[in-house]
Length: 66
Image (cartoon, rainbow, N blue to C red):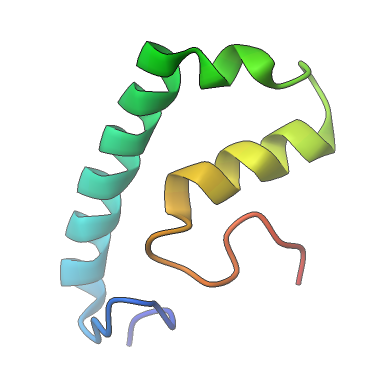
């Protein structure tokens, strides 16, 4: 069983593959555009912002606290 996701993927292995691919692309984007440098080091707000950026295309809960 896979986490609830925006892509409608129900197989956890497939979701893991897609998540890895998308999050690596988004991480590269953060480095190349300088977005990563806009986050304050060591704060929860920054960690939440990074999580949101990396996973917002996959999960509705990206960057949110449950």
